[in-house]
Amino acid sequence: MPVWDDADVSEGPGAASSAVEGQVGAGFQAMAAGDWPGARDAFSAVLEVAEVPEALFGLANALFWLGDLAGTIASCEKAYAGFRRRGDAMLAAGAALSLVGYNKGYLGNTAAARGWLSRAARIIGDEVPELRGELLGATAYVTDDPVRSEALARQAAEIGRANGNVDLELMAMHAVGTALVQQGRIEEGMSLLDEAMAGVIGGECGNPLTVAQVSCMTMVVCGSCFDLERAAQWVQSLQGFIDRYGCPFLYAECRTYYGRVLFENGDWGAAEALLIDAISMSQGVFQAPHAFASGTLAELRLAQGRVEEAVRVLRGVEGREEAAAAVASVHLQQGEPSAAAAVLRRRLAATSPDRLDVAAVIELFGEAEIALHDSGAAIARGRALITLGAVHNCDLIVAYGERLLGHALAATDVPAACAHLETALAAFVHAGIPYRAAQTRLLLAQVLGHGDREVAGAEARAALSAFEDLGCSPCSVKGCPIPRSPGACSCRARRSSITWRASCPSSACAGVPRQRRLPRGVPEKSARDR
Image (tube, rainbow, N blue to C red; front, top):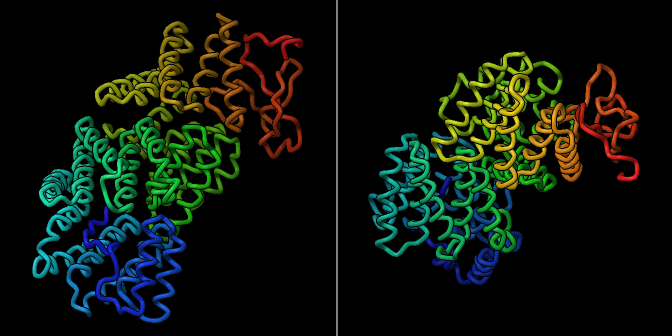
């Protein structure tokens, strides 16, 4: 995804005609201020008069920030051709390297990315040896071998450090960290990612695109490691940059991961907007990110109790592994655990059992097994998740394992089940993930309802209050105690219920007030306490 472009076009138009120099300069000044529409308009005004390669290159950059995929690539290709005709090897190589990143990261077009990489390599080798570091970085990005990627990125970082090129050094450092994570050296790799992020946010680099690229890849790597807490913390640190330049998550994949972070953190409105954008950006362009964004939005819809909308979002991507968790969740919502298990079994068979980003899939498989009365298998999956998280020092994976283990033990060993659920709850609360914490509280309330009814009542009320704050349906949550019956609203009122002031999500009872009910055995609040 990085665009390894050290051709510093932001310094001005170079050989452009003096008649348009001022307008081109205004475009670059607007870019430096994060005024992407202003930059687009300035460069477009120049291009109405003459096809100036610098204006085309600047326009490609502005359109990239504005999310215009077709315009970005078309403008960059024209800029490359213009630089070649003019004999400007430095800027031609820069444009070619930019096209490596756009084609791989934006389109998933590896063939085109490698073609542009070869073109850049020929120009740099013959005419611009000073861009060797950028070429090494681009090659590290395109290669599928993480060991080779690490070696290439380390060379690029050394060149950047020796030449005082901080943008190159930080991007290469991040690429080394990414390669290490892909090799399973997660703690070592994440340390480098954190260092690179600190450098770009701290203002060491001169190009806002460097911040965007490093931030975008950080979202992707954190997602691959299920390290949502780290991702959320870096998003918080990026707020000042976002206020000035806009959202740095410019590719569909990293925008989806950002949406996932906001979903988990409870900012569902912002998450929804980002996920819809990611779906639009990737539709008909890049299948994997499109399925990933669609699956994530479907999970949000399920959490909101909007099951029919989740099903619509998933149309066309049901067979993609990136959407498997959402498809299986729909089956579980519809009382089809066997179908859910079949989807999840295929998903896990297609990947390594040591991949951290399938932790939620493993827990979901365990939930399907519990519904199929195979608690023994679910217990084994819960313990495996705990081990996986502990080995890789990932508290959230441990928490998912603890929650699954607690749920699986609930029917046979209540004290042990409660202990595991308490551990999971503490981890979710510590990580600031309100939806998962509320799910776990409600499950804990169910287990406690046969014993410590006072604590069970407190946990259930806290959970339901959290669901209300998030805007989700209690009927949609894992372990929801509200009974379901065909053709009837699963959250229909009972006399002993505590009122939930919201409309019922079920189309079968539109307009019927939704009410919330505590788990069986949990004491209700008295009328004077309501």
